[in-house]
Image 1 (cartoon, rainbow, N blue to C red):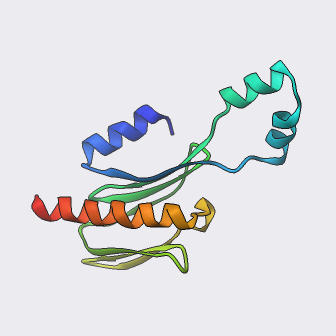
Image 2 (cartoon, helix red, strand yellow; image 1 turned 180 degrees about the horizontal axis):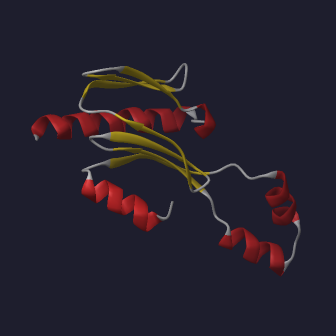
Length: 129
């Protein structure tokens, strides 16, 4: 997904980006990155991959290496919580209960704190509306 597509989703659905981080490099990318050459530098800069976790009022999107990995839809969530021990977002909806695994994002302790803070801000903003 491109930055433009992500921005469009956030504007259209009153969403927020919970987490943005650099993706892990593949073996091939590590080899190219470690070679000291102009070609590898150009390749590395042109192939920058990011991971995103996006929360809107109607869905959660997990983007790994600039591609949509999972997309979860819900009608109107009652509660949303991040469990840092299991690296899972737990959503209780009017019709269902979802546990969304975030192990592919490899969230660090600092990113976990940022994620919890972003979730609380999103919930406060949602309650004001």
